[in-house]
Every structure is written in structure tokens, then in C-alpha cells.
Length: 197
Image (cartoon, rainbow, N blue to C red; front, top):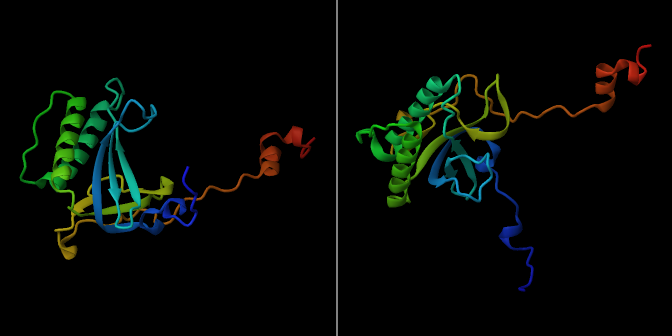
């Protein structure tokens, strides 16, 4: 066994994406991955990983849809819109999308093309938008903005960029209140807590 050198950067801990700051992030690389047999059951079927210049990463997961779900048709439109947005950025708006027979075929086909395009141009850089959710759905951790547009090529001039935080986007992390056991006991089990008799 070699010596353990705690001065090594491998012991620095994880780097926080964009220093934890919400907004537009420039000069980001994109990687594509597909779920493997070793991954947990709840792991995304496909994943876009956005990596900043300092090596910090943030993921956006994509899942096969449940065809029996009541909102399947609406979710299919949402997923298709998102994939079409990314397709236009990664492959080019002039590259025609193929037709697919199923949503599974769509995800596999589109992510296969993303993977090919990114692998053939690994130095391409992108601009993305990250936030802490919305005022209605606050998030504890930084995430890729939920609805497109949230990615564009760095070849788009900054003054022509369509990216930006939405009006209801949160720029600070949601921090849950500390749990107050005494308060909770008094208000959920007043008889047991002796508050009221």
C-alpha cells in the first residue's frame, strides 16, 4: 500500500457547482450516460452531466415514462419538448429529428445521437441556467432549470442569449426549519405532552 497523503486534492471533498450560485453558467462541457445494471433502481435511465471549468458537475436525469400513468400524454409532450430543445443545441437546429414508434425508442435514439455528437466534439462548450427551484417548489440543492431553454452553445453571443432565470426562480437554497421536538410533541400530542388536560 502506498502512503496516504492528505495534502492530495483527492481529499479536498467535492466541489460545489458554480460555487452554489444560481444563474447562467458559461463554458460548461456536457457528458452523456445511460443507466447500467450496477446503478440503483431509482437512478435516471439517461443523464446529462454538465461539468464546469473547475471540474464540478451537476446532473439532469431523464426517465422512461410510465405508459399507464394518467398524465402520460402530457408528460410525453414535456419530455419531447425538452429533448427537441437539447437536440437543437447539441446537434443543430437544422438537423431533422427522426420519428420514433415509442417513448423508449425516442429516449434511446436521441441520447444515442447526443452521445455521438458530444464524443465527436468533446471540446464544445455550453451555457446553462441553474437555480434552486421556484418560489412554489423550492429546492435545497442547485439544479438545472426545469423547463427549456436552459442550455445553449457558447457560440451564441451573450447579448443574443435566450437564457436567464425565470421570474419565480429561487436564487438561494431552501433550508428546512430545524425540527423542534418539544414544539412538535405539544402540538401533535397535547395530552401526552401535558400541555392541556
